[in-house]
Image 1 (cartoon, helix red, strand yellow):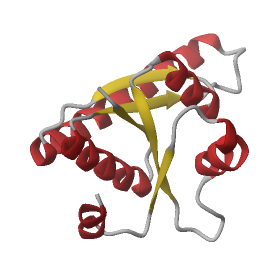
Image 2 (cartoon, helix red, strand yellow; image 1 turned 90 degrees about the vertical axis):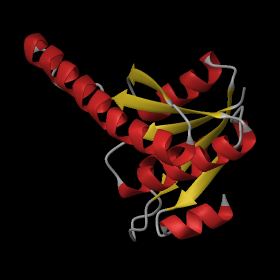
Image 3 (cartoon, rainbow, N blue to C red; image 1 turned 180 degrees about the vertical axis):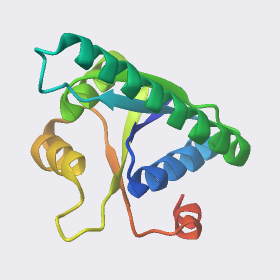
Length: 152
């Protein structure tokens, strides 16, 4: 089964990417895999604090996943899978694609700010694009729900 890998964050672009992936998965008999990434902490000398921060980050990811999972299941009949990894976003996305041979496409949301599409899109596509093992779909952050439905 082909999986659509979506990287979860707190951006509005994530919602667009997730909606697109869920609709495509529903139409093609695929699955949605949501990847939550916990960034490495800068101050490792406070081990107890860092561990607590990781625990809280994992809880936030799981809570966000519950919300989005219910919406996807209700609207598209898809029950997504949650994967949580810790590390650099680009490194962890590439590692997940390498470790899960069912991932057939990465779906990313692009920001609409004047600063560009966002760091993950820039780093993953601009710097790694030619060597990625799977295609990447970039969903513009400016698309409306109706637009995403019509192009999916």
